Length: 291
Ligand SMILES: Nc1nc2c(ncn2[C@@H]2O[C@H](COP(=O)(O)OP(=O)(O)OP(=O)(O)O)[C@@H](O)[C@H]2O)c(=O)[nH]1
View 1 (cartoon, rainbow, N blue to C red):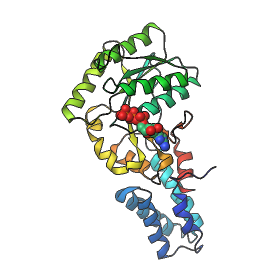
View 2: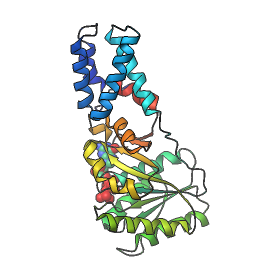
View 3: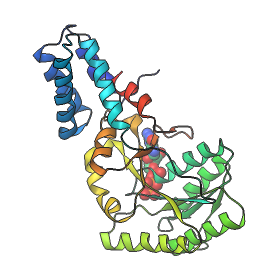
């Protein structure tokens, strides 16, 4: 498997290529590597403590064996959250939210394309009516993915109206999934939540909201999470999408973000191409991360 830039194995490899036997230095290097990979101080400490305890209990002396134990520990923690997307409603309405520039529109394009492979009939809604370019951008992605789109009838139309029309189209046209893009501008908490609340209420007149996906940019790590706090507190988020993992050495953020928010990661974006989005599989991710 190709080496990922976010992979922690780079940092771990220098430990691994050193002495084969665990020394105090191994632990110091491991701690530094965990912090570099943005596992965050809390998760790093927990991982180190439990790993140390396991290493002592099983009288492990080899770095190689310790690496396997670390991989298992990371996988176990990643798997504590259920990454399954709830798409059984017909239509399954998905709201995509997040601060600006994190990759919402791109994610919707990639996600629509991904779902098409499962023979789903999909419509996307351009409820980011604030930025004209955002509507065009979603239009381009919809075309690429070969899915239908509902656009605002005029510039600056109420986002809730576009969301309503999207769901209406989904119901009347027998679509499986409606994915709705929302504005990403940083607003006061009140304004943002009023707008999202209205979008939600209007949708729910016709169909339940199946998923509210919060998109987070992995390159901003813990900072980005602070910016997104209002969404987590008030928007009824059901899952996270991590984007730009290709441009980040911070793969450890994946674990930190789940533990800090208590929310599962459901999708992972690793590039700007239409195929660069995958579901989240703890086993595979732990393997790629730790090596
Ligand atoms: N490398 C990389 N770039 C990405 C990824 N996802 C999105 N991008 C890029 O990030 C930039 C912003 O993406 P958008 O989809 O426009 O972000 P947005 O959240 O919809 O932005 P607003 O509508 O302004 O809130 C674009 O240049 C994308 O190509 C990813 O997984 N990897």
